[in-house]
Amino acid sequence: MTMTSIERIGNILQRKPVDRIGLFEHFWGDTLGKWTEQGHLQQDEKLEDHFAFDISGSWPFLLTADLDKEDEVIEEDDDTILIRSGNYALLRRHKHHNATPEHVGFEVMERHQWEELIKPLLIPERRRINFDNYREAKLAAAEQQRFFCWNGVNVFELMHPVCGHEYMLMGMAMDPDWVRDMVNTYAQMTIDLMEILFSEAGQPDGVWFYEDMGFKGRPFMSPQMYKEIVQPGHQKTIDYCHSRGIPVIMHSCGFVEPLLPGIIEAGIDCLQVIEVKAGMDPVRIQRNFGDQISLCGGMDARNLVANDLEAIKAELNEKIPLLKNGFGYILHSDHSIPDTCNYETYRYFVDEGMKLGRY
Image (cartoon, rainbow, N blue to C red; front, side, top):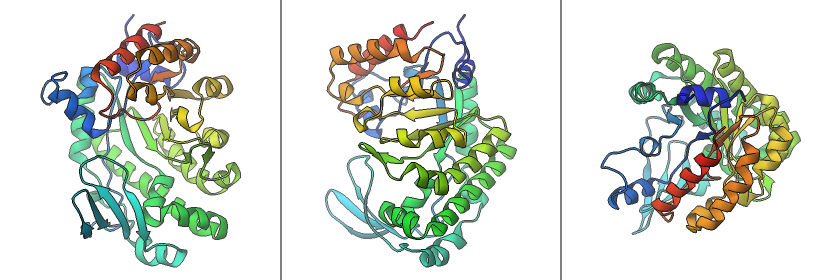
């Protein structure tokens, strides 16, 4: 019996029987434009509709500290622009590509700057919420019977835009109470904004938090440091979601396997993206933690970027028969899909994965 996407993902997040594995993907912004220009998608057609993804979402919160401060242009050239953001951070952005900005400098480097510049601005105001975007996306998902997620970042990804990774991590070691205060402040503001949004516009089927807590071969912090400083914020926000009956997916790039016991203790229902090139292995994680969490991702995007159909097929055949055991897997690359991946390559990835993913 064929299930709706809402039923399917709801069951996968609880590791209950389903008709097939789930399907979802993230793309760089340039990819949709290129594939549309090539004629593979109709004008204004969405990737989630074209590939029949099981999940869609909305990013409704604006959590920049100073909402009244427009990005100040410091300098620019043909390719990049340097701005000072509403978080009082200097960021260099590429003009022609959708890429992570370079962190150039930060006015917040210690506790007193946080307390003077940022913390007084972090008020859960209604203008931080894009109600219209959330309502429209929620309605569109319901019409397609697609599992709908509130999308946003959690405490780790809210702190480093203010003070940068280096000062945040030095703070964890040298002034942990400062970082704990940032964690608690952002966790509480997130909950307060969710309460406003969900009470007025209805709650989602799931919450998807983005937290890039690792890099190649290492997490940004030790498991003990995670447990003492970051985990309380995760647990606070996840407990709130669970109190409303909402499951939680958590994304993290990088090698975060050492943090997984703490992340699971904080309450996540599903881990995504399981980055192979950083050292993550979805089969190993499923073997060690598959009775506690579901998984989404773990398919090496380098094979897709290389348009190597043989490598894609081999990886799918190696992993999916194992990952689908226990009903807790959603097919997804281990990162996101750039425009160097051919449409035909991604189409092949989806079609082969769905064949292998049926029960």
